[in-house]
Image (cartoon, rainbow over all chains, first blue to last red; front, side, top):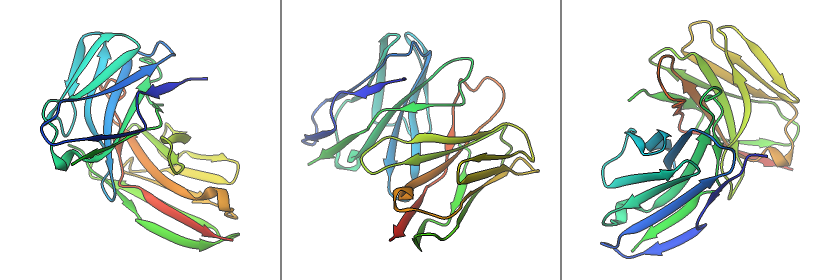
Length: 113
Length: 113
């Protein structure tokens, strides 16, 4: 069974703090993705990575950065958290050859005060 | 980026009723997928469609890939309480997309016993 885990289910941070969200997958997938989920807006892609140290901007990268130093781990970084980054963050992974199916983690609900 | 319009945004139905939801795009997709998100969890793949006109079933779920490749439909027959959740359509473009998916806004389904 594919497993995607995220470091926290719930996180509360203050405005201006640096925030790290960690994601680990155990299926040796090449592709990894970070989304944010907001009511009425669906899932919006922040960044994705198709290989170690490779990253591409998604549709809403502003205010975020990512790091992929190891194949199984993909980190999302909020350099200076703001209240409009309060959201549900979902990590996903997929295999290079069958990349149509993305496997999701349980999500991290981040609140920025 | 590409846009997917999913409707309806929410549905309140009685147990036993059939459900229909659809997704339309301004651009062509090579693959259409339907995901379900249970409360507190990440989305899980229900059905994947690969060819225009394809009709695929998974138990009480039936999905179709539109002939124009710009739309897709999901039907749920004889709904039960555990069908509650958020349903997302997703489309995958061709070319070197690294498995990127574009998601719809989601349909929130509530089933009354």
